[in-house]
Image (cartoon, one colour):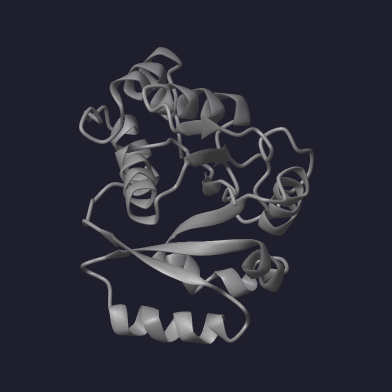
Length: 203
């Protein structure tokens, strides 16, 4: 019997997308044997404010992943009006592709936040959590939290990840200070940020 596809989901504001996001997706694909990874920029995030307009964040994601044949841009959240919620996104995906197994790729910090999201138990029912664990994290604490979430139905795969000191916040600060970001983002993204004059005036 043919198995359904194994699809990873990389969600986020991607403000901007950076090498850490790509490294996480590549590690998840390799370790979890994913057929494909969907990069899913958020539209209106109810948890974050002062985010760059959706169209430009989407453009940067498209540029960053175009060289990877198994990475695909998904606009399911970017095109949604109003707030976007992960459980609703997963409902749409599962309705369209009932035989697909989805793997929601997250950083370890999200394990400690996900119970505050809308309908977390529905998220657990529809997707396996793939949790990136860096070597500077307290793995015992992460496992303890994982056990607590498992009691609510979560299925968690722990992903070994090298530590990579890069964040979108730091990148925006570097751009504003006219510092190079060439080692933090794909060259196409660095060029787009400069061309569109993004983040230079950020508060």
